Image (tube, rainbow over all chains, first blue to last red; front, side, top):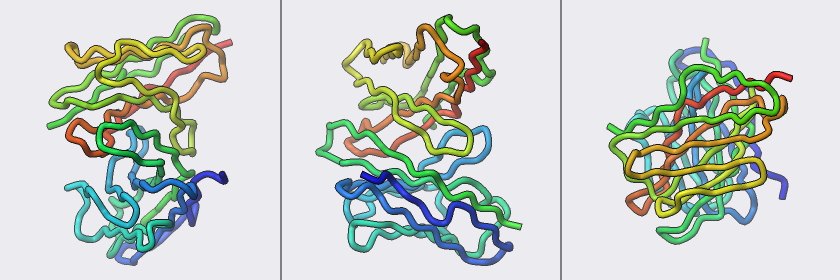
Length: 117
Length: 113
């Protein structure tokens, strides 16, 4: 168990550029979450996957954001035409998953810090 | 809209005392509630989970209570230590069968030696 890993750890980009982040969950975990966190705030839910299926997506997520988990293992989060307001820490978490009504403990990665100039 | 409120002010306590953090929520009926610890520049770390039908949970020096009538959870750290200094996040999960998680803004705790 190597934990959740994220790449890159830091990304600086210019406004208008596209960026892509990668998350590798804990190997036996079938659920994967993406969050965004700004200074002084808690993580803000963006989306989550059960295996390769994207089950829920925040209404806050504009059409510039897209996430994929093509083989039910690693996931990517892409932001197109970045804006300065996209500057934040992007966190990924994974969990074992379970049936509806069960509990689900999430294990977080170290995050990718995005700065849009 | 769904809202979670945690102590907005930082909490400063003396080593050895009990720290009590509050989490209040509105317009939500979660299936369960979790508390996480977050250190600067790092991802949150899970501490405790309590279900809607449970009143209290304990783990070592940690205790969580959950009152679904008041829509409130209290998180206690007894015999606090400087190493307990961190931000503590309250998170609500589910309620509709899904696993969307909503976090509060967190409370910063400082334990002075």
